[in-house]
Length: 209
Image (tube, rainbow, N blue to C red; front, side, top):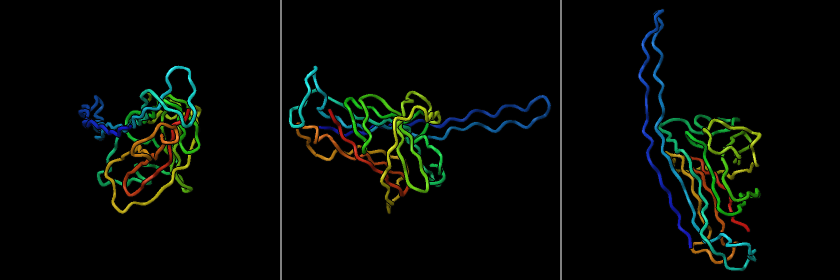
């Protein structure tokens, strides 16, 4: 049995007051502005975690709750260019807004072909002329711009398609393949979908022993 939930809380825009002119008659500094964004998370809950030291076979029953979740700052386009604008070309993008986007899994996970041990990871995106890549990184609990390539775990190619209806806000989905997963690890899989503007990116995920 699984549940799919998305929760978002609005982060209010803030602006600092303009500082007064200096003693030498310097013009006042422009105000610093923080663009409004939302805080969002997407989660899948499944009974998939092993209890104790027993190793389960592929067709054996699984017990214990597990959670797969992505938490991110959710930017909004507001008429601005997304691909090549808000998402830069040939530069690692923070994949959201504010704090780093994080992936949490209670069990071992495979994204496309990249094997990840259970735990927490930071996610970044790279857009080039050749396509899109998802970067999995160990640098969690940092600001989204604090990307360190030395902490990379791996990179995977993202499938891309163009949508006819644009999406105003960056939205991430974790969609299980099975409506009611059974008792084996083969049922604990789905697609990761990333939608913003007219671009939709995707890859597969699956939970493994």
